Image (tube, rainbow, N blue to C red):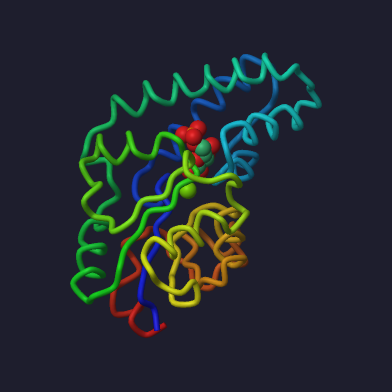
Length: 214
Ligand code: BG6
Ligand code: MG
């Protein structure tokens, strides 16, 4: 039976996935590399540097490590600017209520995001208190699809991985959840996330009673 629910942040709790996309698109345009929301799917859930490397691979471009650091920093500055203009009501509708319902039924709740900006985003939205544990990109060696982030979240919650349910919008995140031995709700279509156990168009469409039946 599910004892804990672990949420990804970008694209699951708040639409920051869109801000990551427009910042990467801006950089790709500057580099002259064609980049659309289709290619962007590969960037979801992976680290900042890995995202840049995927864009460079798409453009068959190779750059020195120092230049890559500078470009990744530039993208991050744009992302931080976009996020600071965000309003607390940009959290997806129904998410707070879903989390409150999960906690009211005695299940634990964690956040597991590859983003090093996760703490800042949660603070801006004033939702840090919704989680029993928070794991972000500053706390892990390997980002999704490696299971490390979800295994650490389960350990912090003192719950066995097999009793955890993950909400993910990224293919890399679904793979990480499966590799951790967890059940996974894909936030997106079955075409985008074929390996997830369940699918919803939006996080809050999955109800607490559905979770209790898993
Ligand atoms: C993930 C996003 O949550 O965090 C990725 O899905 C992003 O798109 C990654 O690249 C790293 O984020 P940040 O904020 O550390 O650059
Ligand atoms: Mg995500």
